[in-house]
Image (cartoon, rainbow, N blue to C red; front, side, top):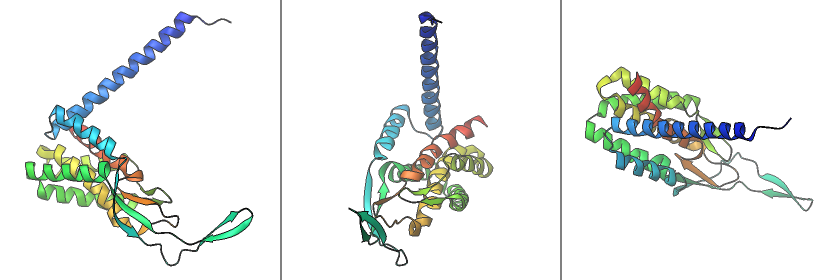
Length: 221
């Protein structure tokens, strides 16, 4: 059976249109979310770009020595077993997943005077995130991406409905960083060495989504 080329073209066109509409909706939603926390449109795109580009940049700050109880890894080299001693892990801070969100959170706390609200929200999110965070070999600490934004939006609406957008941003980003990475530094080192990044790998998605989804949820409730 021959296929109608016009039908295929129509299907492709519909898919492209739906994709463009979804992209427009997403960009509009992000823009609205950042306006809710007092970030102008021009600065919003610059902040998003810096966050995404910065997610590829890790700033080394320390070395995590391997745990003494770790056994040497044995690998075969040309059929000969070779024992590899555990290596130190470089501890780093991710520019897009930790430095920029932290700076933005401090800015919001100062601008909107939401110190106690942020403290309560961050503590709540950090506690729950710490309980669900899991160390993953060669990745770091992994957190389900949508849970921190949901927690942040809920606690923000509960403690300060008038400043909920800013409180949700701060609670979601800082709560994730503290609950996932900072309270699990002892679990971030790996026997294979490499880089363990605060705000990177397994937690970047949760931090990034917290800066957008939490504010959007607050706006529509």
